[in-house]
Amino acid sequence: MTANKPHLSDYIINTNWTEEQKDEYICTHFGEDSSAHHNAVVPPVYESSLHVFNTFETFLDVQKDELNNYVYLRGTNPTVEIAEKKLAALERGDLCKCFSSGMAAISTAILALVKTGDHVLCVGNLYDTTFKLLNYLQKFGVDFTITHSCDMNDIAAEVQSNTTVIFMESPTSLTFQLFDIPAIVDLAKQKNIYTVIDNTWSTPLYQKPLLFGIDVVVHSAAKYLGGHSDILGGAIIARQEVMERIFYNEFMLFGGVMHAHEAWLLIRGLRTLPVRMKQHQQSGTKIAHMLANHPAIKKVNYPGLPSHPHYELGKKQLCGYSGLLSFELQDDSFETVKRVINELKLFSIGFSFGSYESLVLSPNHGDNLDELKKYNIDPGLIRISVGLENVDMLIDDLTQALNKII
Ligand SMILES: *Cc1c(COP(=O)(O)O)cnc(C)c1O
Image (cartoon, rainbow, N blue to C red):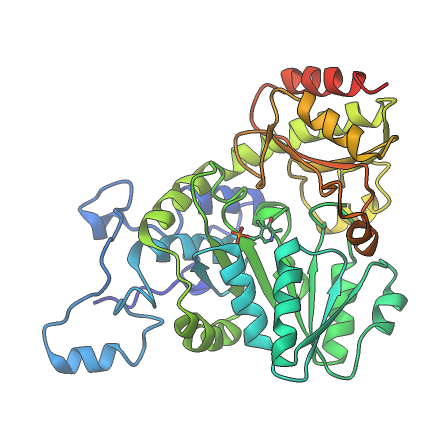
């Protein structure tokens, strides 16, 4: 049994490397030891629910430290651990634990940081299911409010005496607003509030929130990290003390763990993350510019466009832009939104993002105008995930669909 823990101390990375070179090394090689697997270059899928021991004494010793030993699959697994080491290193955090889904990671993170009577402040729009989770938690006496303002004075005014968590996405994944992460961290630290960020849009390559002082980063691995629309998974990355607490409490108790085969696919996805992200960025930027010049469109929401209201802030916080963006039609009727979506040929209609295939959807479902208003979302908003198809073909497709409505 080796104590093989995903810790930053085995971060054997040449200090002359740029941050980008480190990330590329982490994605391709870091956290792997082929000598432990008969020199197989690709690590095996450890489909084993438990590990066995030669003596009862060893078992008793090892099970006192499940975080650092392989005992039972609800704790650690050698394949999953490789993915965890890579994600921790990419985020420059101490430890990562992987989960069965992004929501398993998000619910675990929130439940770790609240108790009855506490308040969660949501800065900007969150993933829809995260809001549903916070609604659900009201039955345990945990309250939440949302502020849509990007102004720090407005955000500070929303902090209550019982606020224990500030939860945000920056950029938000429908409207692509950005928030001043260091300023929010400052505010939170003054008031002993934990900060949690959902970093799914940026991936750890394009934003490293822990370096700005954020306490907890969460991810859905089904998006860019996996990148091939074939897994569901999530992750939490944080400093040692926070992760240890989460591991022995919410992680082991709720049991929403990632399985070895999922981790194996995630590791495979991570190997190409840097090259995929470059392409998503390049195609996303080209498409955002094309959309911004189309007469059927009122507004394009993409942090990589110099016309984006938070472009300068983005340049301080982000080191790149992924391929998920939205645009708002001049004619915001449901009929027109539906028409554009249905006219697209290369963009499939589907719920996720961040994979090889281009996707489209709208939060306007034709019967939820009140809800859109509540969340500050324009009814003419259409979100596209720019995939890895030929970008000129995607542009032609968008152009023909948008030309139908002018
Ligand atoms: C998809 C997604 C989630 C939820 O992740 P699942 O893996 O679907 O549970 C959370 N946050 C964001 C930003 C997402 O895109």
